[in-house]
Image (cartoon, rainbow, N blue to C red; front, side):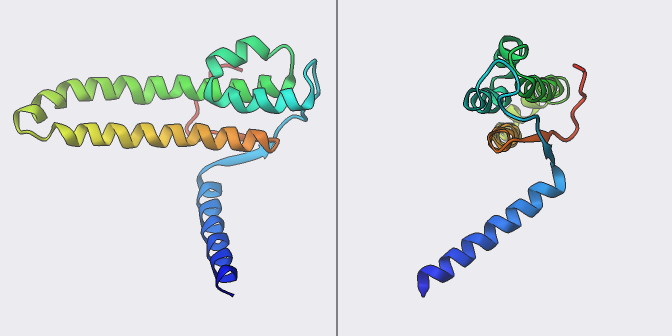
Length: 148
């Protein structure tokens, strides 16, 4: 009886998490696996990896698979967006604020903020990987989509 309650609690927690993720992330049906030169299993692998290593996977496998083309393009656009709107401003802010915070011994606040931001970005890419393995395409929020 107790394990049944634990399963219900875990299901409730995962349902809440799914509701939060669905609120902020748009997930669509992705292209079918195995539609190009790659097998369905290889397609699934490379689509997932494209979310973590888009700068390598997309140029390498995009002509072999329509699914890798779409997933890699979405992930690479997100990488470009992160570089333009997160990494560069963080570098500028940390340079300016860092010198002030070092003087008053609060530099760890800046490090903590940078750690939380980067952890959130990594979490987005991992969520994209997991959705890609299910055959879904994650449309990242605030993505510039410069590569058409």
